[in-house]
Image 1 (cartoon, rainbow, N blue to C red):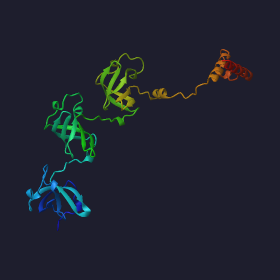
Image 2: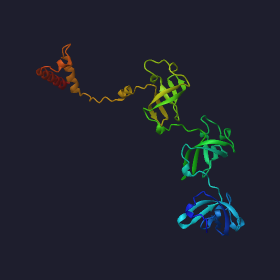
Image 3: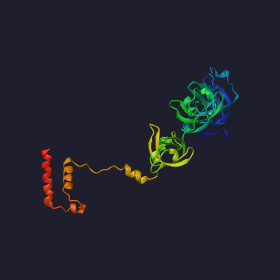
Length: 311
């Protein structure tokens, strides 16, 4: 029993060259150099095939290549498989992960790609190119090696979503009003310019946000391909819209955004204010107005009440 591997040191996916020590109805016992023989279940004897009798496939003393599938260290149990495990587990398939895969099947709705994961991923037809394509076979064929990005991976749903279009550097959740980006002018329209800032959609700078004063047309300020500094005014992930500005006057925007919290005057107060103004002599300063005789104030107020009641 010297130089035997402890069960606690064996991890899933570890590869072993073992020897069959016993063939049973439910599987086979295999010596992999551990403290106890590991067990190969009948369902794991032939990769991709169903086995009815283990003895028809394996013989005692036969050398086989196996991988650890499950380890129960406290019980000293190691379960084996002859199916090479994928290099990637479900937890490795994070959104945005870049991989190289091989197309294994092409359907009208997309292409299935093997990426070394627990199952093949699907590239929907709409995720094969930035532009519209008629059918997947116009872009890929079986056996093609392609670069893909993970868009979704769900062990519960047993699905892996892929895309042949590189995901944007900026996620919608990462874009906030006030952020400043350096972008490239992608195209010009009569009403403004569209700027690529690395998001899924280009942001739009309205012609009125390109500078101060009158601007005839966007081409007077920028040209396609030019790099410009822009600031986010508004982002709407639901509508896939990003509004930008080339103005960097934060204080002006803040002043425009401020709400006038002055309480509205009631009709009585408005009438009283109008009466005051009509009785104020020309050229009298605000300070002088505040010094109006109290009797005059009472007279104005009384006339205002009578006028209001008569209406």
